[in-house]
Amino acid sequence: MPLDSNQTDFAVYLLQAEADDDWVEQRLAQRLADKENLRPYFFRWEGIPGVSRQDSMVTGFNRSASCAVCLGKEALTGLTEEMKKIAIERKSKVSAGNPAYRLIPVILPGGNPESTPTFLTDTRAVDFRNEQDFEWQFHLLVCGIKGEPPGPRPRENTTVQAAGTEAKGDKEQIQAAFVAILQTIDVAQRAAGLSQKEASSFRQDAFSNIQKKLLDLSVEQVNKSKPDPTTIKAELADAT
Image (cartoon, rainbow, N blue to C red; front, side, top):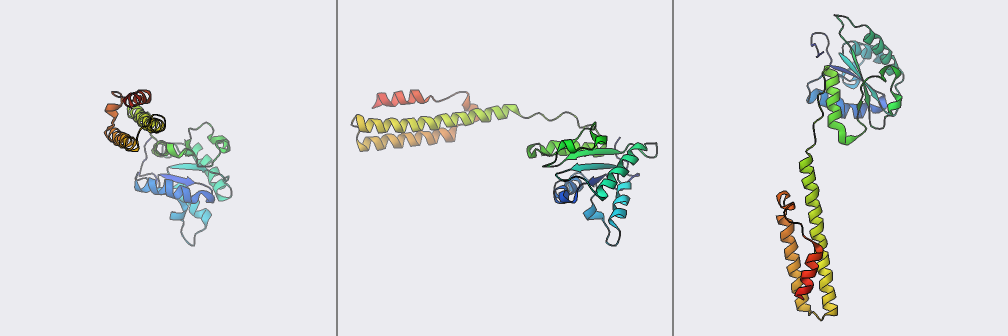
């Protein structure tokens, strides 16, 4: 069920150990507010001076439509443990005036999935331990907050990736051929009496040739032309 703005003031209550406040603020709270227009209850932002931490947290918790239980290196203790208990109670009181309350397990970098509370073990988690997968996991978090299915995971552009891999392979092949040519010129200069002038000329030609090949190489050209170092060496040997 999507969020009902008439029911709550905050889209999600971010529950984490104090040791994880910085990461949660920078990577989750700010982005939820700025990019997704989802107002989180984050104690650093909402705690009122002069009001006890516990009262502020309970108030914010009760005015949030969901709760992200963030599991980092340190266990949830003290007031955060109390918030967890309130979350369980609220989740159990589902009615027409109190829609389903979503508790979202969120594994932070360095967190241990095995530390997931028992009451959340059968719930799909958001896992931020792999930085390269951050965007998809953040999408899952947003969908959990909104109460919406995430849909299929976007497919990677395997065609472009494959072409890029082939292009890299061809560049390495060209570079290997260049090294082989230089080695052949050195052998020819020592063993076959190739003059210094002739050797320098061959080296200059080889350098110019590889510069052109590397600059002109494109994804479309990769499958059309794949230089063979063995052939190039043989042709150079014949020329000398």
